[in-house]
Every structure is written in structure tokens, then in C-alpha cells.
Amino acid sequence: MKIAVIGGGSTYTPELVSGLSRERDRIDVSELVLQDIDPERREVVGGLAQRMLDRQGYQGWLEITDDLDRAVEGADFVLIQIRVGGQQARLSDETVPLACGCIGQETTGAGGLGKALRTVPVVLGIADRVRERAADGAWIVDFTNPVGIVTRSLLDHGHRAIGLCNVAIGFQRSLARMLGVEPARVQVDQVGLNHLSWVRQVRLDGEDVIADLMSAHGDEIAQQSGLARRLLDELGVIPSYYLHYFYSHDAVLAQQLDGMPRATTVAEIERELLDLYRDPKLVEKPPLLEQRGGAFYSEAAIGLVGALAADTGEPHVVDVRNNGTVEGLAADDVIEVLAEVGSGGAKPLPQPPVAPELLGLMQHVSAYERLAAQAAVSGDPAVARKALLTHPLIGQHPLSEDLVDRLLEADAAHLPQFHAEIGK
Image 1 (cartoon, rainbow, N blue to C red):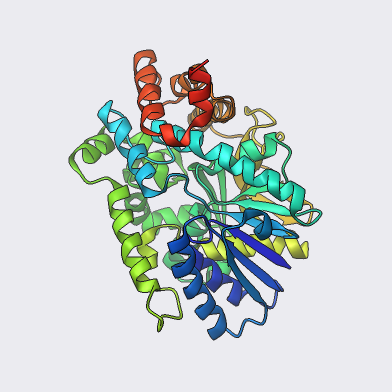
Image 2 (image 1 turned 135 degrees about the horizontal axis):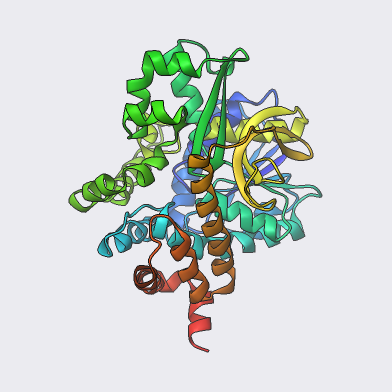
């Protein structure tokens, strides 16, 4: 099997390499290619990856390259984990909205739109090369944010793709710790969209124990979600952390206006990580990587690849077409739910009707994601404005107009599709 990692110079890559080693009995990777456009990252991250694989006794071939075509040639799986514009663009995502009195977050609200506009065309370009050069039946696994919009765009353009986020596996690990059991015994059954999901059941050895969990650990779960315990009790579900941007909007905005952008912290962590990675004695992922975000990404990614390759039918939480799974959403909306995964892809498991207080928010954000994906491809500022007009965190015409103008100006170097349209 050949796996190509696009954005292989990411500081996440040691997580992935570590996961490959653990799953070597299930996934026979004869060739691993790390592709990245940044020469320094290729050298530093690629060097650590080689040392890790050597220590693990990897018998296959590792290639580090900037050549996209060479990377995807004959690949069975292509994992995409890129950040168009780097951490500087992330800083823009987090600060431009704040200047307009809106929450600044790189995957949610106006910041998420900015990231989608510059990311979707690049990912689609990569996917076109995969279609032309990869092995027949190759899968694209997208970890690039905003995952829901990127996955929708890939599927809209006919690519064989599945979206992946680490939120669900993070829940699984955290709840297993609270239960005092091995994670493999815990199954998280969530419903929603990427970065907009709620856990409705937590099954321990097949039995739903969410009520017991909330009774014994409700305060801790609420604290982790950034929300009040009373809200979780009333909803009867466990919201993902990203819901606090909606449910506690004003408090979060006040904190952001008074604090340091997360992008600044992450940029510093990345600098420290790359310095650590340069150490020729380092042969395993350092503990600092846990502070970077994306925890358990390797387990989620490699588990998904294994299920696709071995046709296991294992359940994984992934981003896929709705196709009637959630009543009230369009068939072509992309949802994030538990699905059976095999060689033919992911088949969402049946979901009972979603409560109106959850479904209403999903419908709003699904409509926004549809418009955001259209705007990213068309380069039409009017469609981008409609997207923000639809988003629950924005929803006002003067504000959406101001935000789109600011986003297009801040990201001009990465938005040629818009500036070509504006110049007409």
C-alpha cells in the first residue's frame, strides 16, 4: 500500500507516523510519501519521520518531496492536512472578525469562511491530480479544516473522499478515562456537522451510559465543553467544544477581545516543536505535540484507513453525505456521524430524529456551508456575503458586507479567484 500525505511538513506528521507503526499488522504500508511545499519543514519533519520509522523497524520506503504529482502517483490513500497561508493566515482568521465585533475562530463564523475561501480551490486542485495519477479506487481522506466545507466541495466535484475530525475520538478517550475503561470499549454516537455536533449516546460494551456519565461527571464534562452544567442537563446531550461559540457567544467574544489569539500561541508551539524535531537524538513524538491540538489524530486517521483498506465495516465518526440520515437536512449536505466503513466507503448508521433545538442550528449552518463552498469556487463576493448573512454568528447585512471586504483584502494573496472576478 502507498500512502501520500499532502502537507507532510505539518507538525502533526509525527502523530501520523506513530500511528502507522502501531497499526503495521493491519496496514501494510510499503511506501509512505510526505509532500510539502516548504523546504525547511520537509527537511525537519521528514528527518524526524525517518528516525521514528527507523527506530520502529519500518521495512518500507519513505520519500520526502515537494512534487505533488510524484507524491500521489499510484497512491492508494491520499491524506490532506494543509494550511493555506500558514499560521499568518490563521491569525487573520482570528483577528479580522474581532475588528468587526465578531468571534474570531479559524473554522467557525467569519474566520471559518476566510479559511474555506482560500483552502477549497487548493484542495480541489490536489484532488484533480489524485484523480489523474493515483491508483484506481484511491481514497482521499481530508483532515484539512474546515472539514465539512472541504469534504462537501470534494464530493460535489466527484472525488472519492471522506472527511475526518478528531473531536469524536477525543470524546471517546476522555469519556473512557472517566469510566475507567479501555477506549475500545466505548463508542461515541454523535450527530451534527463538523465542529457542530452533539453526543446523544455513549455506549459502553453496547449499553448507553450517558445518563450515568452525566450524573457522575457532569460538571467535568460541562467544563470541558465550556458550557454550564444546567444547559447540558436541559439539552440531554454532550455538545462539542465548538458549540460554546454559539451558546456562550457574548462571553467568548469578551474573552477574545481581552486575550491573545490562539494563532499566536499555536505559532509559538510550532516554532518550539520544529526546534525539537531538529534534534538528531529525537526518535519519538515529543509531549509538547499534545498542546498543538489535533490530539489522537493518528489513531483516527490510521483506524479509518485500515477500515477502508481491509473492508472491515468498523464504525467510525466521519464526514459524509447525509442521504436521508438526518431528517430535515438535504440529501447532499455533509454531516458528521457514526458510520460503517468498508472498501466501498462510509455508510451512516441510522439516526433517530434530531430535537428541534439542535436541528435548527444544523440547518442554518448547513445552508452557510453550501454557500461557502459555492463562493470558494466561484469567486463571487455576493455569494460570500450571502454565506455570512446565513451564518448564525453573523446574520446582518452591513456586517456581512464589511467582513467579506476585510477578508478578501487580508487574504488577497491566496484568493485569486475573487480578485479576478472583482477586476472584471
